[in-house]
Structure formats: structure tokens, C-alpha cells
Image (cartoon, helix red, strand yellow):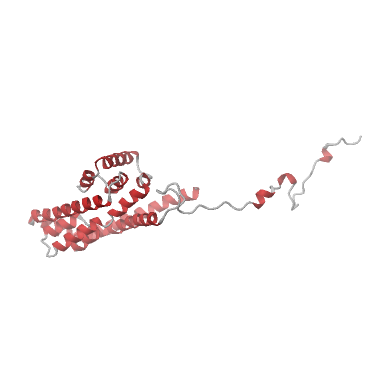
Length: 265
């Protein structure tokens, strides 16, 4: 009996060694000719604080904030050593309150120079946060809160609200030794529309008063505090080395945690 059309003998059998794909397996000409998908530029990331391609001042603020983070990391182990080994240098590098107190406690002959350097040092990075707040608005605060706990976010939201509402008083309070981060207050007052003149006048006056008070506190504490300072000086190098180990371990652990996440993406 003749085979009916469409029977088993009419099936198309593909040679597994054949080079040409079947018509059904061929890609459309448009798909074959389509260019590869363009890779995103480093700045085209939704996690970045800006919208669109960053301009010159965006990049200045961005690299300024990165430098500030690296600078703080490097200074962390040095603080513990320099605060007694060379408090004038410490005041100039970080504006350290402890260094200014030590200048007064020890009646350092260069305490006046240390005070001036401490004032300038405390002001050196303030403009970065203010300019970033003007450029990026809430985007800067959101970027700083990435990966933080819900409690930290709530606190930052409250601080931002207070800073926007009260402006100058918020800046003054942020200089007190209380947990009111200047890194949130400064961009918040910029978002609220504070002028550069008001910003600089407030910060300069607050810094002069505050840093002078720390030196005065050292003079007032006097000899009893000197004994404590001299005792700490004997172990300051070891404390500095211990902090250096902590910094290195922290960086290594963070890198190892980020590597699997990057490979999964």
C-alpha cells in the first residue's frame, strides 16, 4: 500500500553533523544583524545621586565625598597616636577635639597655632556637602543611607526635617557633641535654600567658638588630666596599631561580601 502524504517517511530527519540549521532554527535577519546591547556608563546607575549625565560640579562633589571617606579611614589609626605624640599636627589634619583638649591640658607652647589649624581643619570639607545638597537634593541623603538599617533611616529623616525647618539653629546644634550628623544637616539646609553667605558665616562662627571651648576645657582640667594624657601616651602606639588592624580587616571583609553579590549580578 502506498504511503500517505505526511506519513512517517515524509518526516524531516536532521543530520546531527549538518552545519546548516533548519529553517525553523534560523534567527531572523534583523536579530542576526542587530548590534550588541550598549553597556551602561559608570554614572548611569540608579543608585547615583544625580539624574542624567553628571556635570563638572557633580563630579567634583562625587570625588570629594569619595576622598573624604578615604581620608577618614586613613586618619582613624593615626588619631590614636597623634593626639598625644603631636596634637598640633592632629588638630591640623582632623580638627580633633581631643587634640585641642590635650593642647590645653599640657599647656603646649604652640596651642594658639593648633587652635587656628583646628578651626580651619573642621571647615575644610563642609562646602562639599552643602554644594552636593544643592545639586542633588534628597539624592545625596538617600545615597548615604543605602544599606543602612530602618532605624538609621528614620533618624536621618527626622534630622533632615529639623534641619530644613530650623536652618541656622540646626547647624549650631550639629556642632555639639551629640549624635546629630553634620553630613545630613548640611545638605538638608542646602536643600531648604540657605544662601552660601549664611552657610559660611554660621559655620565659621560655630567652629571658632566650639574649638576655642575645647582648648579652654584643657586649661581648666589642668594637672589631673595631664596624668591621664601622659599615661595614654605610653600605649597610644599600640592602640593605633590595633585600630589599623581593625580597619584592614573591615575592608577585607567588606570586599569579600561584595564579591559574591557582584558575581551573582
